[in-house]
Amino acid sequence: MEPPRAPAMLLLLLLLLLPVLLPLPPCAWGKYVRGNLSSKEDWVFLTRFCFLSDYGRLDFRFRYPEAKCCENILLYFDDPSQWPAVYKAQDKDCLAKEAVIRPENNQVINLTTQYPWSGCQVVSEGGVRYLSCSSGRSFRSVRERWWYIALSKCGGDGLQLEYEMVLTNGKSFWTRHFSADEFGILETDATFLLIFTLIFLLSCYFGYLLKGRQLLHTTYKMFMAAAGVEVLSLLFFCIYWGQYASNGIGNESLKIVAKLLFSVSFLIFLLMLILLGKGFTVTRGRISHSGSVKLSVYMTLYTLTHVVLLIYEAEFFDPGQVLYTYESPAGYGLIGLQVAAYVWFCYAVLVSLRHFPEKQPFYGPFFAAYTLWFFAVPVMALIANFGIPKWAREKIVNGIQLGIHLYAHGVFLIMTRPSAANKNFPYHVRTSQIASAGGPGPEGAPSDKSFPQHVYGNVTFISDSVPNFTELFSIPSASGASPLPRRSPRDPSLLLLRDLQPPSSLHGY
Image (cartoon, one colour):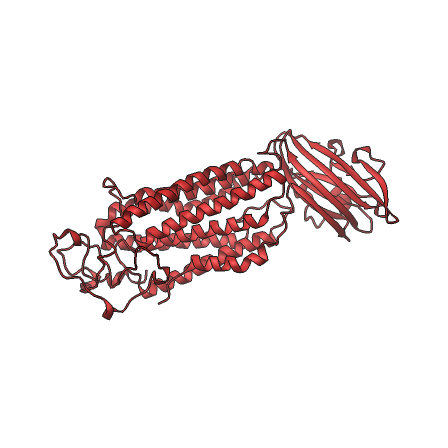
């Protein structure tokens, strides 16, 4: 049957979605913001930024027809009595939204020549008189705060404004264009890029050693692929944040590609964990027909949900609110799928241990370590939504998320290192020793007690030199199998290999 190919599907969707996602402009709350506004409303949100307590700075240039005079720039901060009290408040009109502003805090910039701090002057262009305003404003507060910039003209005939704003935090390369909630993201991503590059190189070296011993199984190749894609993702993130630090704009296309690669790495790793839980390449050489169908459906659903989450975040997140990725229907769906994957993982590991108790040195630590990993994402989402202040959330969540991925890859690298001192090493059957012979005993139990219960089914492994994911879960015809000759149980070449099919009770979970 056709195997699950969720990672490949995600890559295909990436290619299909790039024409849709890549033309997106920089985020509306970017550090360099410009645009041309024309609205029939009398109060409109423009942008937001998280300023430092002492070094925040807004430099602006506004221009609008003198006939549309007089418009105001309103500066709200994140206190419950300010922005949360007015944004999307249906019971408040324009005057009520202006009333929450504190004039003593210089939160209003009147765009007229009568207000000297606005830097406005009248200019003529093509016979039309414009008010052109160029100036700046510094921000001081007791802590880092989100500031929200709105435009108003209460009781007027709508709004019209050409605007250009530069929002900065200090003069350092590492802080100038970054919102305070983004401080440290570039440095964090660069650090994890170096660490994951080391993990990927070590996995390639271990893979080389395993290949020499004919122990380079498909699941380990999947781990190497997940680590490699993670490196690519972090590389794109670092390039994006580096450009952003330089000009305050960045290239949003790079960020989208980085997020998609991050999702691909996660999906490959998740699929690998479920396969190992089911015993694939550890206690069996194939996955049953029903098991392959279930994996195909599940991974396809997970892949589509990831893509929907990225589209939802890009198209439907409200720029007037500080939202976390998982604060969406797709995000909640991903959390539910993660919990479902853990239940499946638990069942698979318990069944594998019941039939192959001698694999406990691997499955015991494996189950304990990745139980923490499965719950880390839902717990992180809850903490981010309810426990982390919004003015610090993005940088903290970024570090936690990368730490979770590092934990997952690091644990697997240690557990599968090809060392004689490693008692948890899962692979014991050579890729060239997979044979087809015999059948299961009563109730799926092994029929020959003279061999250890490291069971593989009717399967011939694909070549180790070239990964063939198309045949990852294929079930070859039994008539085409060529069984190995029976040897003595003491023959080291058959250590941990039994001429049996997998117990029938293992099929389909």
